[in-house]
Each structure stands twice: as structure tokens, then as C-alpha cells.
Length: 145
Image (cartoon, rainbow, N blue to C red; front, top):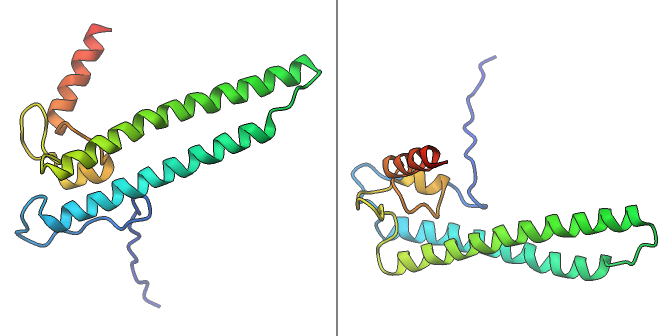
């Protein structure tokens, strides 16, 4: 019995990875639409999660008489708020990336101007630096710490 090989593509926020045609121009209208779709889906996921947090925090706010229970609840709320703050910052980056798409500046390194690359953008749709500039930036940050 022969086994067939199946390729499982990893969805990016529910969207199939882009498969460029041979000789296709970098960040053409199809690719721009693809990344816009990814960024908008990601943004929608984050916004849906934040509205759930607000309603669940309102529902779960209970005044526990036991100090341990109260401390546990405060810790959970603190962690949730920290997560939401990170997501708020991520939403800002997503919106900035969507703005860059509108001005045709998306997908190009903000330091050296070269193509960031489709695979890197699919891995990190909000990337603003090519892999070389990002690596140099991380090395500098490590040396300053």
C-alpha cells in the first residue's frame, strides 16, 4: 500500500499562505490584498478578545471575603490587563502596517529600504525591518544590556 504525502499548510489567522507565481513582482496588488486580509483578520481577532475581556471582568468582579481568593482574583485581573496592554500595542502596529499598505511602503525595510520578503512578512506581518537590520538591532540591544 503506497502512502501519499499530504502537505499541511499553516494558516495565518485563518488565511492560507501566499504562493507566488514564478517571476511575480514583489508586493503586487494580489500580495498586498493577501497581507491586508491577514492584518485585518488579526486585528478583528484581537478586538473580539478585548471585548470578551471587558465583559468577563465585569461579570467576575466579586468581593471575596477570603484574602487568598481576593489576591488570586487580583492577580488574574492584573495578568489579563497586562495581556490586553500588549494586544493594544500590537493593534497599533497592525494599524501602522495597514497604513503602510495604503502608501505602498509596506514590505520594505525602514532602515535600508530593501524587500523584507514574503516569508518574513507571513511569519511577522507587522515587520518593518529586513532580517539583516533586525539581527543587527538585536545584537546592539544585547551589547547595551
